[in-house]
Amino acid sequence: MNIGLFGGTFDPVHRGHMALARAALEQYKLHRIHFVPANVPPHKQRQPHSLFVHRFAMLALATADKKALVPSLLEAPEEGVVPIKRDRVERPNYTIDTIRRLKQSLKAADKLFLLLGMDAFADIAKWHQAEALFRECEFVVASRPGYSLADVANALPESLRPRPEVTRPFQKLAATGDLVLKGATIHLLADLHQPASATAIRQVAAAGKPLRRFVDASVAEYIRKMGLYR
Ligand code: ATP
Image 1 (cartoon, rainbow, N blue to C red):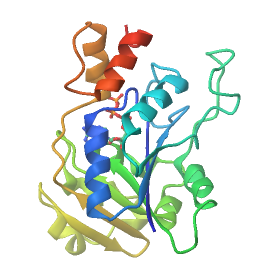
Image 2 (image 1 turned 45 degrees about the vertical axis):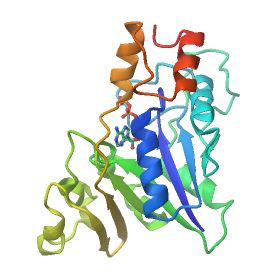
Image 3 (image 1 turned 90 degrees about the vertical axis):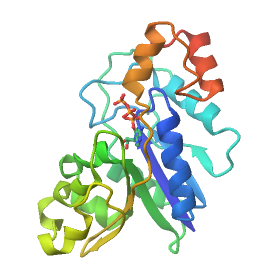
């Protein structure tokens, strides 16, 4: 089976995330996608605004009526979902560890795809054990307004970066297709034009404006009820 792993802060989960998941599901015939909210995202400048438990609850709501989309506890806090002391320093959730943990529950014949947007992929070379990530799974990199898929090859860790003649076909703005290299397979998902971003949504929520355009109705209601991002 083809399995997707979609990590993020999901603070909150929004239409951009859902569009990426839907497109990947269809295009790569995925049987399911694990949405993995990070307790401590290693790649973010600032830590999440909402507790893990809220971000997980919003994911559970957003995926509730979609059989193939599964909210995951793979990166849940070790001490339990509600921390005793909020400012306790916890270990960052490295994707390489999460992949290996998920793989323990998969069959040898299953194929794992790591899903992410181009903004996140732009920093992939800085991720913990970046080269090992490419050995463990195939990548699906989605377009995102403001970022160009033409930059995919240049973003690779240096040891995996191919010669320019290999990547030339991908060096156009609307690059699409599969980049198959020695040690890395990257599928480009170019048709995503969803402008939603969690940062912008938190600002809209803080201003007390309606959120239904950006997030699922159940998620908008949850944000309102719990007073998140105020
Ligand atoms: P923030 O604004 O807080 O940085 P975000 O909107 O980027 O958050 P994340 O939870 O950090 O959301 O994103 C998780 C993953 O989803 C990342 O790989 C990111 O690239 C991807 N992603 C988020 N929004 C979009 C979007 N609108 N289109 C395509 N990919 C997206």
